[in-house]
Amino acid sequence: MHSLVLGKFMPPHRGHCQLIDFAANFADTVTVVVGSLEAEPIPGGLRVEWMRRLFPALDVVHLTDEN
Image (tube, rainbow, N blue to C red; front, side, top):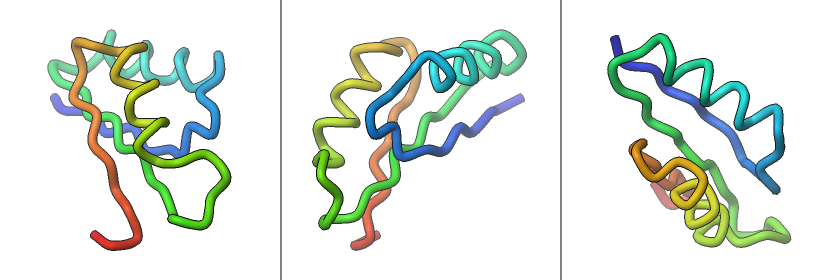
């Protein structure tokens, strides 16, 4: 099974981490999608870096308003 976790992660917090850990315990693969808009105060690229550091074994992708 593949799980998809979507969020802005602005910033990532304990609840986000618990949700992602829960998904990882039940799915074969997990993709974390970081959604961002250019006008947001914390750049999306930085949030993607944070999530990749927190969850190096998972696929983290960046969804922007340009996608």
